[in-house]
Amino acid sequence: MASLMENIVEVLEKENAEYQTLIKLSEEKTPIIIKGDLENLNRITEAEQVIVARIQKLEKERMSTMKDISEVTNFKADIKLGDLITMMDKHPEEQKKLKDLHDRLKETMNRMKRVNEQNRDLLQNSLEMVQFEMNLLQSLKTAPETADYNSNAYANGTIMGSGTKRFDAKQ
Image (cartoon, rainbow, N blue to C red; front, side):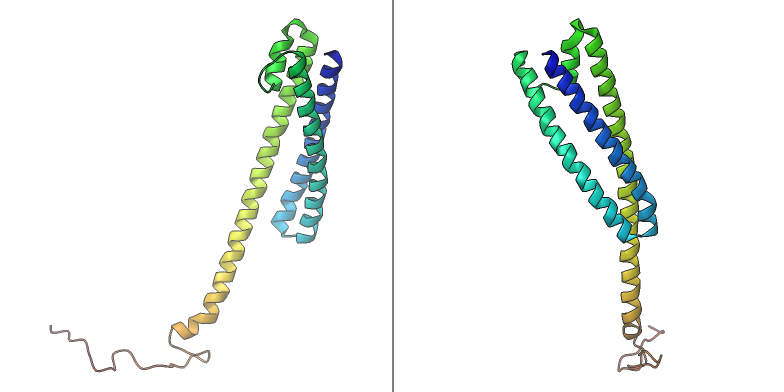
């Protein structure tokens, strides 16, 4: 069990470090999104994908170790880090280490969530602005025709009310 505990602590510390690196990249991405610098945005996204692949590998290792711990302790369900912390009450030193690591991971995830939400909102605003500009350009192209004027500002059609029916104000 001791080697499993050391293994889970090591894996979780590595995961936390990878997430910290991912946060730094996400924070670098924020001004790039604001500038609309697609080249650097692509570069950072590629770097993020490499880190996410490493995190996925660590996550598989974490799940495997947790499964091994579950089997050793005869824990019936999928064991979670909180369960493991509770189980370690007879080993206060390891319990404190796990609790501290759990708290750091939780703080890291909350920070990651905030940065990602900020970047998502910025990207959404950028997309809305692009859509607005496209609609504006589209309407500028079609506005002269829909207003019954050609591009030289001459009337194309008939004068309103010159048809056979007229409005009678006396009625």
